[in-house]
Image (tube, rainbow, N blue to C red):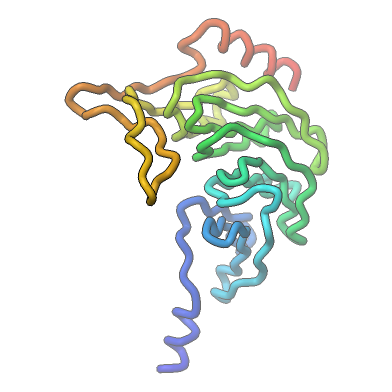
Length: 212
């Protein structure tokens, strides 16, 4: 029993950004080591650990199951990388804005979206498993970084939440570069933002859909 327990609790992962390939493998980010981790859910064993360089501190992950590609976005350095889910090879990488929190892939259109705290949605299109093109990003609002994609509509139904922000705190030894802080809940507000709320962004999305 002691040996069995040792095997069961050999490792522990925070699965906040994890994705599954539908065949038994689970992939997740290790933000502390700037790695992508592959875990076999059938045997509960870690199969591989791969560097996500040039990205670092990865916080978001999505997957193209058909073509076995992982989409990983990191905060430090600020890069988005496309990784082979079988070999761990980084096949393409792109710089992104600061404070990435989420990414989402739509297999029907081949479009990938990356949202960041700086108020940007970076948009990429999968031309092939090893070639991605970049569209102009969509400007949202500072603090918008939490995102979910509705793949059924194939419209840019990206629902993002933000709030009003006040000035950053004074620099301190433990936080030499403070970020703007959310205002007090009583004084501030929370908003749900969708690109459909703005005509120009809606037109941009319509053009993207036609191209893809």
